[in-house]
Amino acid sequence: MLKKIFFFFLTAQIYAQTIPVGRPDFTEERYRNQQLISGAHHSFTIRPLTDSTATGLLPASVLTSLNTFAPVGWNDGAVIPARGLQTYLTAGFFAKYKALSLQLMPEFVYAENREFETFSLQGAYRAPMLVLWNSTDIPERFGTSSYSRFRLGQSALRLSSRSVSVGISTENLWWGPGFRNSLIMSNNAPGFLHGTFNSVKPLKTFLGAFEFQLIGGRLEGSGVAPNTQDYLVYGVNYLEPKSTDARYISAITLNYQPRWIPGLFLGFTRAFHLYTSDMGSGLSDVFPFLLPFEKKNLPLEDAKRRDQLASFNLRWVFPASNVEVYGEFGYNDYKNSFWDWLTSMEHSRAYLLGMRKVFKQAPGRYIRLAIENTTMEMTADRLVRNNGPWYRHDFVRHGYTNEGQVVGAGIGPGSNLQTFDLAFVRPSSIAGFSIERYAHNMDYYYDAFKDYDSKWVDLMWGGYYQKRLRSYAITGKLNFAWMRNYQWVLDNQRLNAQCQLSVTRYF
Image 1 (spheres, one colour):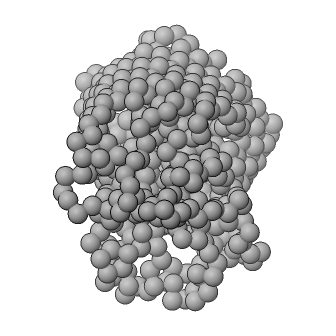
Image 2 (image 1 turned 30 degrees about the vertical axis):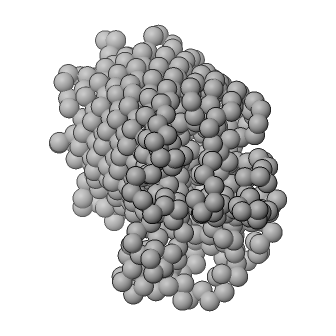
Image 3 (image 1 turned 120 degrees about the vertical axis):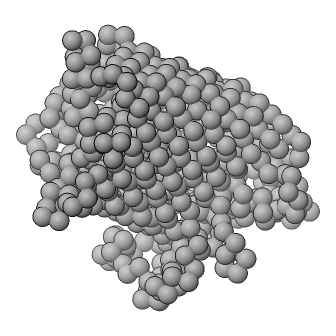
């Protein structure tokens, strides 16, 4: 009986209101696992999942995190990469009147933001890094003192029917099938203000089911002033000041589930961003994702000074085997024509591939295995056609970021990640461990070094445990990162420990 009550409560939580992306109580994890057992209806490639059928207080959470040596971690929304203690708080309520709903769920973050060992290489090793710094807004450290910020967080005002919703939101979004990374939209950075028009459930047609989201929003800078001394090479100052304007982002994601192939989901995402001072007033300026895909049909596109990213994704769920396989393949540059794409498919590409398997043991008891690979580094095509790393841009000099963090894959430009994660799931608990290999910015490495030994690669391992106690969920995580050649300095070996404890209260 207790198991039935728990799963009923979990289902009520899933369909009662928005599930914030990355909520620390493993709600999303359980829902995705359940799809592998009972079959998939939602693609799980457009999040957060919403349904405004209930009112009341939303779960309140407090999370405390500690990095002992250096900033480690991503996909944590408002939390910043910082050394030392950091605390995150959120609570709120959901209310509905007819078709109008309000979700108010603000967030507060405080971080010690202690000093740590930052990039120190000089001369020819430093110059390629300055190219990245001048064309992105990804500070190593968020200022020189403690950090605190209050945001609207996972809040939204919506007007919804049974099928679609229109509104304004500051929620984090996640587009794509990955669980450790997403090429174009993730919860790595804080949520940004955006208008949204989206489906609230799969829209069934004679061809199959469709899900979509269309947004237009505002990306902000980090506000961290660069240190001029960091940009000096052989007495020359290479600092190139960035615009003080905010940026406009316009993006669309569409997912299709063919009627004739159960469990298969095919998706597409396209995003543009540019400084507001460069933005025109035409329809194609407000919704540039409506433009043709071949650059030869857009001779004035470079004059628009905007950046484009696009990806295709696939997720295939096999409930009979309790397995899903998925992938995302993306480009951060226009193709001039169809033949350009066909002859240079590797140019400007990044991809991720993954698999999840559930081993059933008893009702509510199973083991979940997850494996994922993300590759962001440029290919050999760079030798004849250098497109530059993902998320940086010559015109949009903040790069694809919001408040100093990448909006897409949290591992950052030029990086690669392999993940192995095993979890033991019970009705009221989850225990698991993970092993990861994290290769930092290989694009910079190949530009700066001629040797084989100076790659900065982390071996990361750790465990997590969550226990549900009545109206509370308590989660603990302990992760270690053995950093080989930290900051690309040969034989600079470092160890970081990350400890996290969170408590979620349900009402």
